[in-house]
Figure 1: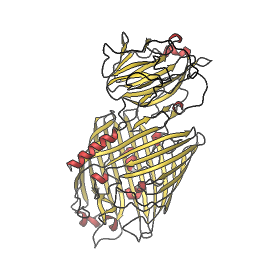
Figure 2 (figure 1 turned 180 degrees about the vertical axis):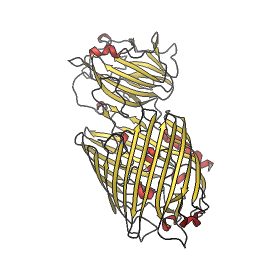
Figure 3 (figure 1 turned 30 degrees about the horizontal axis):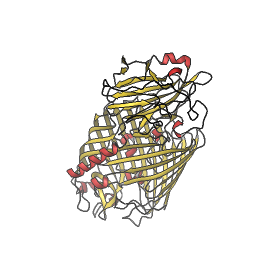
Figure 4 (figure 1 turned 135 degrees about the horizontal axis):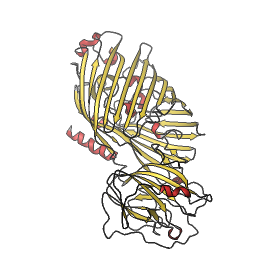
Length: 636
């Protein structure tokens, strides 16, 4: 077990940090405009300490205003009136940089990164963060500007520069030192005489290039001033018209106000790659005297590590269309193994040819591999298509691993197979249409649950269908109602030809700034066959404040003797089983690219007296302690 946990820790660390090797992380970017007359007021921003050609800043949140040089020194920057100064910032600082192009006739940008050796004529922007290329002053005196928020990830000596061809090599660059200071022999950019060339990027209208698309705003930060005239929210990988913050599992909706815990990398062609995930290293134990093993494996306690990691790539094809690719994977097959972890009253799927009971089955190694295409007609209307092998059809609420209300709860819900179990389906085609605050989706998919081989893809099929109606009246609420027609759903129950699943849910999120957030979810799900109809209810809530989190989940689910795998003789009918969990978590590492939290949770289960002889009573208690790992919140 120690070896398995070591493999998991190494794999999780590598996955979370795979996108974190650059020294700076772009949090947000917002395009702005201002008049020349406003520039004087803007330059009166908080200043650093000036010593010769070096400006030293203190604190964790730093505001810097950068403008381009005057006409007689056009290939340079000015910060606090100093030409291309050395900038010194503390480790892990967040920099809010307002870049203003005051040039009369040339385009410029501001990039930050690790540049080795001398600048090339065309230095490019690979492995850097920064602004788009901004045009110069217009005839009416309007200046183009862009405000970026970046986080210094690694200590060291780096450079800021202009990526326009010939500008950096001509002297438009400076040094930036994170967590260290410049030495006496540090080199500064020389002043050169610049002569315009025929192939130079001049201030003239031109077709937009991918890296000149409207600026992104990943977390919708407040505007620095009333100069904010245009900003575009970073889009979901499913639908160009949806903000990234509303993206749930599959094509489902979270509330728009939901914070995003992820790592993101932007590329020069305008595409982006986002990674997020969740993992728990824990010890868990449940009550009851029942034998919870399956095929001779597993007991009432376990050291384990349930996990989920996800990568999402998006690329704009035109200003109105977008292509997306999504993949989700889990280390459950390696760590949980086929018999999963103990979870009193849980049901669903099999191991060793036997039905599992009171255990949560492991998820597939590849839980999602999907492609999306979306087209935005206007600000209110959009159309999108989703195809996955595996993927998630339009059935049920946002899957529990993707809901912030359950983000600190290691256990799956007891009503998982009544609510959101189709999140891993081998064969999915979905078409969706959004009009303003409402969207309607239909899916054709494989309704048969995955087999026991968690490492391989099942044979795809489209034997089932579903439809879902979603409604987001404002940024804090998301509702859905859905119905699915599943054919041959259970591998161990070939006699069940048709299962009808109906769900309804309400998700609420309220953000109280960057340090506090409250998320809650209510879900109802019903399974109906020709012989039986059963219901499930769930309410969960998670309040995060500063480095703390208080969370809980309450469930009531109807399960029959077959689902609970009760030996004969057993009573007939459905039985209400209940579970109530409450927990607390404290982040010991936060906002460092990865959040590491220490948590504990207590769970209390109740079953009716009709089945008490199988469970050794009607009341049971369990507990767990864990370390939670996730990507840090994208904040401004």
